[in-house]
Length: 473
Image 1 (cartoon, helix red, strand yellow):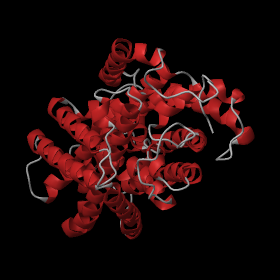
Image 2: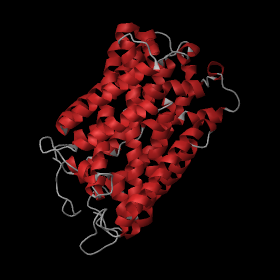
Image 3: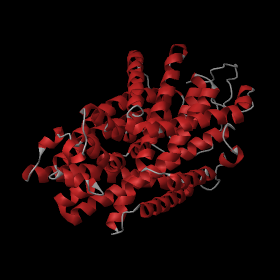
Image 4: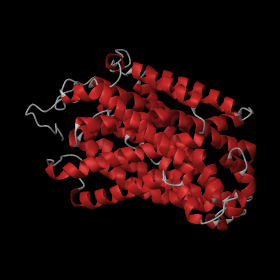
């Protein structure tokens, strides 16, 4: 920390498993699939699940490159810190802004994935107002847990890793056994669902839309890097955690989607149900069996929102520590009792509630929280690609000769992904939201922070040597 001109304020308590748990829970295949499977069925049919492994491979390559960066610069603030040192402090601030918008929006979006399941289990009417209240109450509970301290949050999160694995693998095994000895419709894996979903025209466009599920879900692995200052041996453990989380999530998610889709007996009924996955599970297991798995899924989704809120607060803390955030004295303050940035957590809570109140569409929130990380990843990797030849050798995770080809593939993939998340007519509103947020960020930077950063009064500090690129391990 002294090398990077900071003092150690956050407690280092996270070991490798906890670091992995942070990344794995942020990704949360349970959350992403439960939230978006109905969208996939209604737009491209069960065959749309084959976009998942494609996105998984693309994001795994991105995660590998991010892992090397996390080993070089193990600081809270991830892309803000990285891009500030690789490109310039202005571009670094913009990366931090995009990350801030993404994290603030994704917390309530994740909790929305849990809300209809809770409503169904409690026998409540699944209306927009009921779902909104469930999300708001969930946000408040998550904030209280995070304020209490990182130890409690990580214990819950560590436990949730087991519940997610048990829940998803359990569904795979039990549902697989049911359809193996009962009736499986493997033709569903190639079913475009055109008649059930009411689509027409070329299937390619519909298939592309299904990529939203993977693009929304298989992100957030960098949360492990955002908690680097609370991780023991972060230069080694964080890169391992990031890569492993994406690889396992991609693999388990692919198998789960195959088994789930082959279990559908009446596609039209599933498409028009309020909750497609609970509907399938209830049909195959009955109410009691389905409810057992749904409770495990609720725990996993809750932990996902919990750890995202923690990650968002650490980003706010990192920006405030460098005085490049609003009211920095307030939001860089760390509680002496719990060693967490409590004020930053409260801010995430308040902004999350505002997002719930003013969000017109869950699909809009999901789309925005899919395209924003893709933009952030592209900015970060481009900055890395432009400076990599000038950087010193690293004693952390090193890609060696694979760095250049993987970087090129990652850039091509991210440009393509941003295109499929913005160009189709169904996603135009999502593109507008993302563009507006970035324009607002640019205005905030030029009005509020550009002068101070240019004069060196705020932002990250230079090396003692005066190196304009600052320290990079």
